[in-house]
Image 1 (cartoon, rainbow, N blue to C red):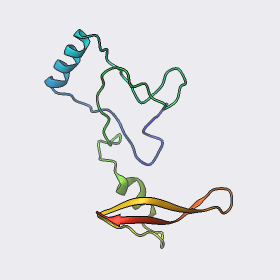
Image 2 (spheres, rainbow, N blue to C red; image 1 turned 180 degrees about the vertical axis):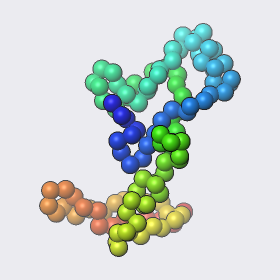
Image 3 (tube, rainbow, N blue to C red; image 1 turned 60 degrees about the vertical axis):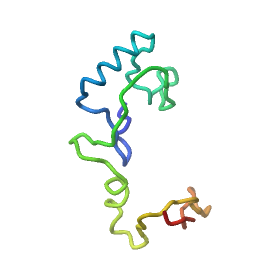
Image 4 (tube, helix red, strand yellow; image 1 turned 30 degrees about the horizontal axis):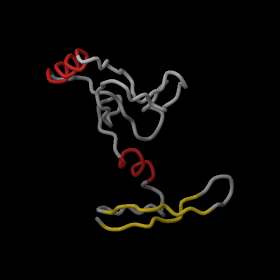
Length: 115
């Protein structure tokens, strides 16, 4: 399964960890907390339900060529040609407004406040 690679926003685990991470893992293991290699995946249901028991590395938004994956690269750049795309910075979206037309709802606006 390619979790983190089949959507617009990629994520992966860090390629390198420092000595502090190793020390933390050893300490946690000594106190009975085992390493959880993939807390974002639930082996029982075989889904992204997650099993948060144990210690793990935090995932990062990095793609396969070690480039940062962000809202810009995932959503804005592929849709930059759209005439109805408006990007507002320093904004907190409070609610996305939808209209029920056709098979899927379509976003028609955003209620927001400036940060």
